[in-house]
Image (cartoon, rainbow, N blue to C red):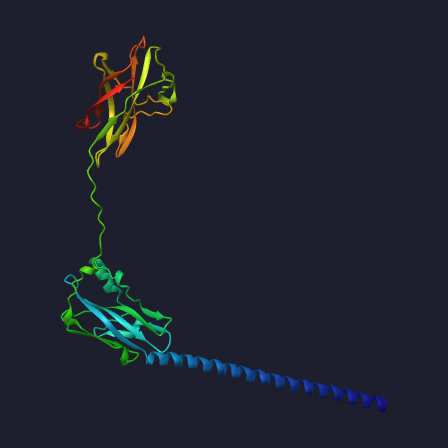
Amino acid sequence: MNDTKKRNMKIVLIAVLASAVAVGCIALIMLNQNKNKNTDASSTSSASSSASASSSADAEAEMTVKCNSYSVYTLNDTDFGFVIAKAHIKAKSTVNLNLDHFTTEDGIKLSAVSQYADALNEKGYSLKSLSIADAIITSSDTETDANLFIPYKNKDAETLKVTCDLNADCDLSFNLSSSDHIGEALKKKTETAAPTEQSALNITIDHASEIDAEKVLTDNDEAYFLPSTARVYGFHVHVTAPSGQSVQIVSASFDGGENGIIQAEKASVHTSVQASIINQSISASGDGYIFIILLDPGHTISAISGTMNLQMSDESQNASLAASLG
């Protein structure tokens, strides 16, 4: 290899090494810049979180809870008393108050009073109408009102204190000696059905019209074959049962005076639009037809007035009513 070639190879090698060094330097610079950015972002996030926590702590530290009014309840059928207090909460920022911060001198946390509410419910009392606050009171405003349920164990106590671990401005105190609420207003209302008038058995029978004998049917809607001298009449009967009782007509007969007594047809006799009322069990009201058949060879009968005698499943309900046909 001559001197010229050797010199050229050295130049190329030096250029490659110089490029590698330059790339390495650039990479180190970029890595350092990213590290600085991450450090700045972390610092900003940490500062933001600290500021938020500080703001929340400041809001709680400067929060005040005052009692606008309250009522003391001592019920004869419970082993504890309770106060319903209307509290006014005021803070620097949005109110988000956990009732776990409040504890009575009996050691009862206001976030854990469900057992006392359940005991009242079992005795027939309800706090539903009072809109009692749950475990957390929240509001989009800096001030809000809330009804607090505050049980206490010693029914002979004259005072009750509730402390708040946020700050002393949230402590509450109550004078129990002024109890004049016996709890009747909290009694759950039970709905009672309005008394209804007791109705008596009522049966009416319409004037009977003649029915085309060819339209009379029997079991399975089969034609009811009748002699050519037969005339069929249907009495429309309306029944209103006595309150709490059922009514059933088991048989009927029409007393037509000089025309004799005619037994009503059995329950299976009907037409395509008229059902028999015989053997129907009626518990409120119902209607149907009683069918009778007259043999009138010369078709001389124009009208008959008489009496319909009804035999009921309960014989004490048997009835006789004026009826007519023709």
